[in-house]
Amino acid sequence: MNALPLPVLTIGPEGRIKHANAAAEAFFEMSLRVMQRQKLSDFTPFGSPVIGLVEDVRQRGASVSEHRIDIGSPRIGAERIVDVFATPLGDDSDDVVVMLQERTIADKMDRQLTHRGAARSITALGAMLAHEIKNPLSGIRGAAQLLEQSAADDDRLLTRLICDETDRIVKLVERMELFGEERPVERGPINVHGVLDHVKRLAQSGFARHIRFIENYDPSLPPVLGNRDQLIQVILNLVKNAAEAIGIDASDGEIVLSTAFRTGVRLQVPGSREKVSLPIELSVSDTGPGIPPDLAADLFDPFVTTKAQGSGLGLALVAKIVGDHGGIVECEPAPRRTTFRILLPMHRANDGREADM
Image (cartoon, rainbow, N blue to C red; front, side):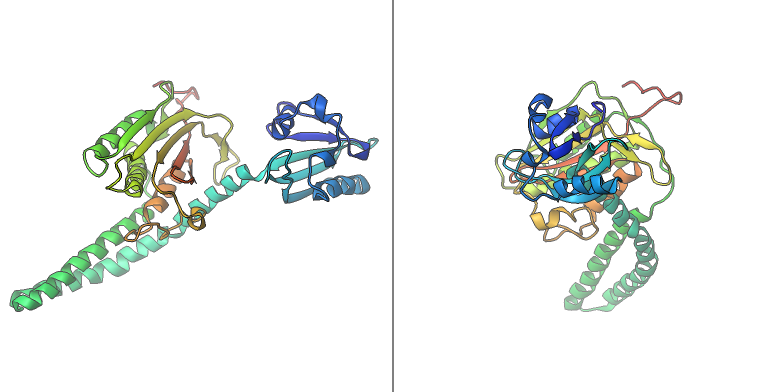
């Protein structure tokens, strides 16, 4: 039980805690010896459904589960949303085993599936727009150029406006076409620090020359399995968003680029039972004003943007590329500190060994 990553409790008669694994001790911030002197009701709010769930298991003699239960209390924290799974310990015992899964992790996985679905949903839209819009636009632009040759000076301003707006729409449609790109992409071992350094040089020579960059790198990080150009596109998009959030007039703007090796995050590959470990973490943080709470949950959906002139496609494309790499991307908004975190699989040699840097 101590090897399990989720909190597990054994509840005896009268709701007394008979055993708890190491994850439960960490969850409740209390040692097993102290927990054994108390009841389950001491850790849950008054009238909590968890108490009734344990009694239901005893009466039925079968497993019962309940989702999204708030067990928050002054003792363990104001809000702790969990899924609860309870089962009898054995046929000849009144003890009940209770397992808790905090919803923060489960919700993160749900959001990743939603982001990937949103990106896939506009794949067909991108292809349709390319065919149905770009062709007539070329005709409109050609007609405007013909009119321009015989138009008066005042009218030439209007024909030039038509051409400029046509070109702007074409550029938008071309960005949409990126979502319809389904050709296999060559991937191999990529040093993420090389990607981050390249993006940093691009930013400091242009749109982010007024912003201070801080690097918190793990030098022992193994290479990721990816495509360098696409990863540069992802990081460049995030850094550009960070610079725009800080603004051109900020004198103390700061962008933090970080890498780390994390264990414990595994994601199932679509269409397979295989689960892939995602230990390589890249993050981009900025000191901008932050993201409105009402947009945070839908930030990676197409056409959702915080910018007055934004198209809302940049982060949707980031979600698609990261998803195509088998990874996940999350936003952690906070006042004056917004962090985008990417988790990616590491590269392995053909014999299954981890590749060296």
